[in-house]
Amino acid sequence: MVIGLTGSIAMGKSEVAKIFAGHNIPVFDSDAEVYKLYDSMAGADLIRPFVPEAATEGKVNRKIITEHVLKNPDLLTKLEKNVHAEIKRRREAFIASAKNSGAKAVLIDTPLLFEIGADKEMDFNIVVSATPELQRARALARPGMTKERLNLIMKRQIPDLEKRAKADAVIENNSTLQELEKSVEKLLLKLKVIKTQNA
Image (tube, rainbow, N blue to C red; front, top):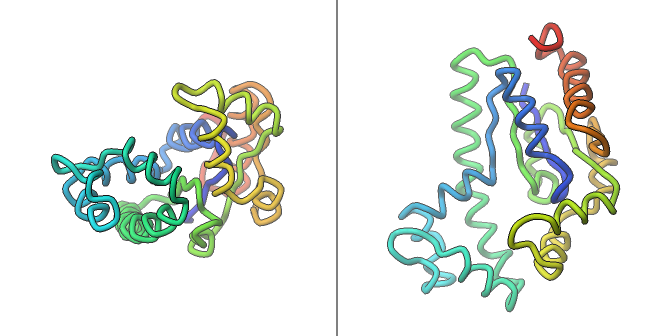
């Protein structure tokens, strides 16, 4: 079973992914793959045609990319189109490898799951959600996060209510980590990808 996981910024998506991993379910972290790509010559080659000065020393300077995107939002669309194509290729290879190794399920952790249409490639889609107040407080507590940057990120993301409507399941994350673990385990049992709790 290919399970898609998403949630707007600071909803707790990464914590849910860790719980899946704790149950021996292989996790493909799309953000981590983007970071790997940006730290490689392949990433530099991908970015160079759009922002030449950001492709330096065989990797991508993310700070320069962010500065350009803040001034020119259309640039982000062009960059994402190319980056998403490469990440999709890596995601498909990951799923094939997991299938060959006999995994019962895989989790595809993708912040822009619905935005890029990747939800259509999944067997089941999960959204992690929290109250708007809690989301904003968590986001602004992150190192280097500003109101301007948070607003830019949130503009790119489909609103939480819309994501909830598109999802096959919603995991609420307004309480403790222990409560979150219980909610995730309950869903895993329902999907029959684990046999018993704490398995």
